[in-house]
Structure formats: C-alpha cells, structure tokens
Image 1 (spheres, one colour):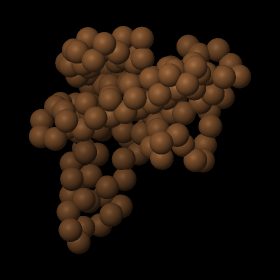
Image 2 (cartoon, one colour; image 1 turned 90 degrees about the horizontal axis):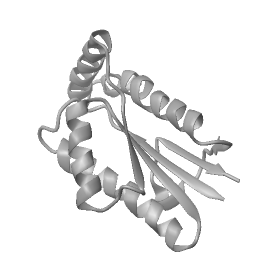
Image 3 (tube, helix red, strand yellow; image 1 turned 180 degrees about the vertical axis):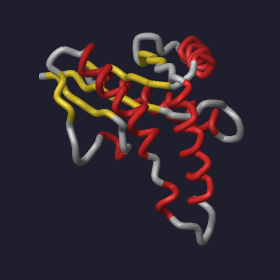
Image 4 (cartoon, helix red, strand yellow; image 1 turned 60 degrees about the vertical axis):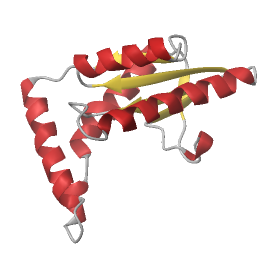
Length: 150
C-alpha cells in the first residue's frame, strides 16, 4: 500500500504568522511520509500553493530539510478574477474570526475551491489508482487530501 498526503494553502503572501504556519504544515507532510517509509510503507506528500513566490520559499525548505523525495510542490497560479475572489474572502475571514463576529464570515469556500479541489485533481491525475479516504486521518491531522494506493 502507498499513502498519499496532501495540503493546499491559499495564502497569497507570507506576512505575519503565515510563514511559520506554512513551514509547520510542510514539516507535518515530511514527518508523515518519513514515518510510513521508516515502517517500510510507500508514502508521498503533496503541497499546493497559489503563488510562485511562496513556491520559491517551499523549494528552499525542500532543500534545507532534504525533503525532495518526500514532498512534491504544486504551484497553482491564479488568474486576476480568482485573486480578487480569494482576497475578498480572506478579508471576510479576518472579520469573521474576531470575537463576537458572525462566524459565517469565516467560511473559506473560495480557498477550498481554488486550492483543495486543484490539489485533489492533481493527485488523481498523477497518482495511478489512488483512492481518496475520508474519516479518521493519520496522526489526527485534517489532510486536505489523504488517499491510498493498493
């Protein structure tokens, strides 16, 4: 069996805590892949980002952590319309995450559509016979994509 782990990140920049959080997610992917490989199971990680500049930062981490065979970087460049939709959603998300705010503003449907669906399509197109799994996930992490190849 081969395990496939994927994360999609919709950030357009690395300001604030986004860089640290993205690096942590990257390392979670590396850890998951290395854990299963150490147990003699095949595993592969995929990380989808939505800008070349963030992809460049990820490539630096791939080199720094010697993770080239663990995590495949996927850069999904957005068109101008999608950038505006995503920026607008992120502004609403910030408002929705304030104390006492309408939680409906914190819904990230565009980020999910643009990132997670693109990640899913990429994995399904590039990993033969992968079957996406739902339910309890390895390490208790909500992977944006988790699948198995038997």
